[in-house]
Length: 320
Length: 268
Image (cartoon, rainbow over all chains, first blue to last red; front, side):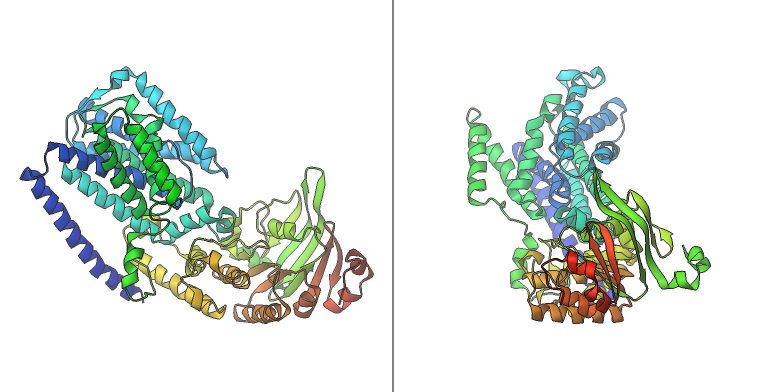
């Protein structure tokens, strides 16, 4: 039985890899040939980074059901860590990204361990406080430029972004479709029942939180080396809120939903930059409309795969 | 763990659970007081009492939700006071809940599969890298869960969200989920609540069947006296957190204190 699972998953993996390779190649070609211009490339980067941020919170809020309203804090940690590694320590960018992930995960454990042992919404308050502490600290550390921030080289390429996305999605998906992922969902659904079924809620929540923090840190590293400059003001509450909106709007619990919302809202917000005075107003109006007509989010708790499965014969297993 | 049970006497071997003077206090209120109780392997024992007698509190003590303020709880000869619920679940104490607690938005199948994971040993990174052990153990969980759904007559609903099931089936799913832990001791908290007489008769037959099949010890809280009298080999009666009677059903039925405790209620 184990072998059939494995075999099916290999053919699938093959198909997915092929699709990914083609997707990567097409965009790479378009970038090299100049068909996607400088502006287009920036939008592409912004979309990719926002997808990562949406996924980072999806793991914490969508899967584990824990309200983190300080994702920008981890974004900042990742961005500044990577920036220090490349500009102050003169190390390669890839190493900087790795450092961003590691430091963010450690920060996640630092915040998560004391707060996630408790039931309830302590995490929300703690993360809010954490993000502010990070921001204010950065503001007052001259080593990283204080309020003026840091000037950085543009190092993030499409390849970096693409590889990051693939790794993150692969890890999130394999995690979700494993006993650990299901245990995480169980804790989201009913912590007491989950615990009675042999699941340690603290482990599950801390793991998900650190996982999400790591993804946000990676996004931070990419972000820092895309837009030439980072400043503490970029990582305020509004940024955390924006990330929260991706997940809620896409449908809490849906990875596809969070991704879709991140893409749509990034495009919307880029488009609205032409009208700076009313940009936030229009943005808010869109949010209100969607919440009025689709309070469960764009996709509810469904995934793209579920929508496709309508066309497939009913399958027994979903082990991937 | 093994060593100690070897040392234990033959009597101790037969005994799976023992409570010695167990009590719990919430502020000034003594919810359960000086409770002595034992279960032998393979027994099916009822725990009854009027509303608010402390029956569910006893379950919460046994499963680690509450930590007793007095006394000692021994499971397979080992003291388990203060161990968290998930550790006790892994050790072999499974339960259902009086006010159903399913994973509502997850499928019926996943509800069972989540519990079946308790014996899987692969690590998070093994899952994320899809190493062989992941596939092997997932296949095993899959098989166990399917079997249990079949046994509990839930196969037709496997992809249904748990919260969309009718009430009686939700109760069955809770039992299936508890069984997926492959427990040694199963605690059922009013499994027949809200069922009509026919349904609860069917359920009792099923409970007897699963006890045989999985060689379980079962402690059953039940409000419906006729149900509990028909199925239990021994019965404990709680009132105001105190044990007022213990014995086989026919004795309990005639016990004056039990009748008084249930004042006004029929003790059929």
